[in-house]
Image (cartoon, rainbow, N blue to C red; front, top):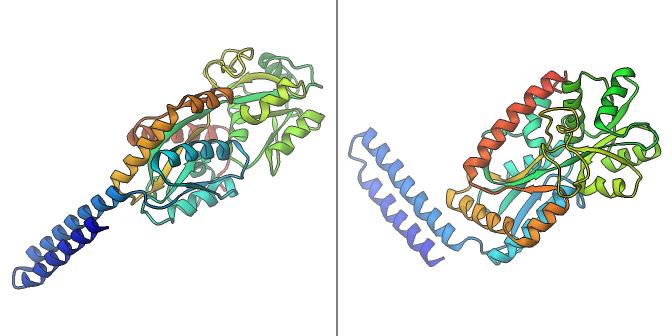
Length: 348
């Protein structure tokens, strides 16, 4: 705080000199004021960075407690909290395809004490909704790419379908008779099957649920036929025999289920649905604080316990710079915008 006070005192002195400059030309005076303000902002930012963090940090997670995003966010939040010497408090803001959580993050004070977990709907919402309460491109700064999740395509054991090829043939021979469980439009459970439909020319009917667990139970009981969800939640049902696993949505097989082929390998070349996870901050957070968070999260992602946890759940570790993450977001946003258009999904 002494450093910050000294910097603010320097700013007060410089501000006083501005008043004495009033006799000069107006354009010169304005330029001088802007220069003084810029210098003061840099000095304050430096002081903030030197002290950051000196109190708990809030991590907004745009999904309910206990789900995959919450589990991963708490894992990383706990590790970076230990590294930085401050508690990271998870703030769950579920609902509206992540919109509630993303809006809360966009409106947070940009002081580095609030950051957010980015789930896949962040990149698909702009193509699903005509109006959002935030601007995906302008209201946030990417911090770091955490990684991607692998989903698992499953069917009810009551069907005579034992492979991806069987599923495609059955769907083509019986158009509109197979159904799949989804949550909100544009969610990964929805787009995983829509991408499959686009690439195979099949007609599989969506059935909406409030929770993917309800959809999973209905597939187990045979009331609907297909569910595609993250391996963290669905693999135990496959291992118990309650669901039949057909393939994983990553381009290659997952170490978490090496006996299951990728959907691309099993008959749909190029198929890939690996939802992105990562971290964002409000747009005006100082760069040095963004880089501090980036550094701490990158360190956490290299911990053996974190790597093992991700691998066991079919996840892939990311990492890298904010710029690399920003480019990843842009490319994936463009990809899924094309899929959404091809699937005939109309923005709401």
